[in-house]
Length: 204
Image (tube, rainbow, N blue to C red; front, top):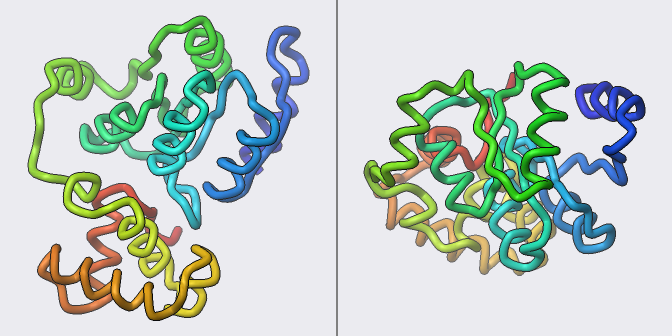
């Protein structure tokens, strides 16, 4: 509903055209590969592949595509990891359409945009490159983060294997490695950790 609402509003903007919409992070990466947009606006809490991982892939493979992250979270960790992944902008979901349109124009022009509502403390923390404790992006490999997100979203080992195009035995190996690295012994702990780290979002 939010995508459709914004898409309809953009039809009134003469200098912005919506060329595609995606419902998952993996779909967003595929659409960027096909359509090569100037700007991608992505929810950080995307299913299958979260917005941070999607931004990381797109910034690596298609550096000319600017990425704007949108989230309900204003915490420093989310902002920091999104920009570390290569994003050019960060907005909160309660932003106005005018702010979103302005952010798109800004990053398309090569600028960086951070929503003023996030607050000076978060911005200064990022600009000063202050590091907190190690995050999932430091501790786990890219594949381990993908497996963790799948499991945290309630996927079975078989479902995760199908989604990631790997064997169920490989998923099991990654699950064991993840639990060993994090010191966890059950899926509930993994799910809570994935939510805290911004790999997925809690059920509404």
